[in-house]
Length: 125
Image (cartoon, rainbow, N blue to C red; front, top):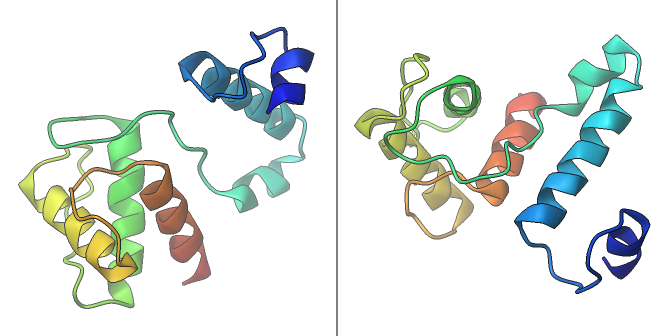
């Protein structure tokens, strides 16, 4: 982390704060944009940089809902949900069931761990 912070002109603290995370995300997006289109679709969806929670709306929620539905095909404990971009009670229930299947805290929020697992598992099925 120290090298990354130094190379990108950030304060060298060894801590990944919001500024560091956004710089990592920017570097990642730049690297991905240089790939051929066929490679870009194979790497999955980059984490949006914040927890996605009940009440959120938008494309990140749609992505979560699509992957939850794919994962639910192989795990009946996860309910299928509408892909409407609205993180409501049914999406939260599906996220909680997914967290339960992973053996992690069941708080109904999608952070980097849940996001990565959804993308990895959703692309394997």
